[in-house]
Amino acid sequence: MEIKILNDYGEVYESGTIMELETLKTDYEDATWTDNESTIAWDGWSENEILDFIADAWGIDYEILKQ
Image 1 (tube, rainbow, N blue to C red):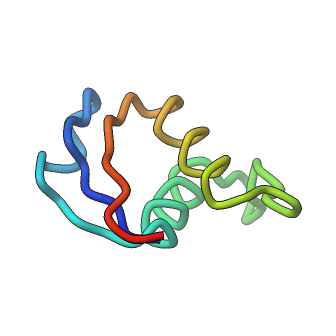
Image 2: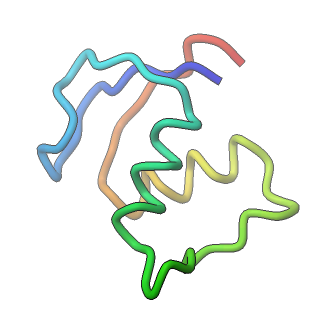
């Protein structure tokens, strides 16, 4: 899934940044891992659920460019 960042209230990503969901997911995991273990088990989550979760947690507005 390809997304475009419209606004990031945490000011990590610039508006207009285009990225794959996998990149955003990896960034989220890297920021939240403790003792080399992810704090989230993504098994069974759809791409839309993952995107909505991270966007809500980090205050990101986005547009889906490609499913």
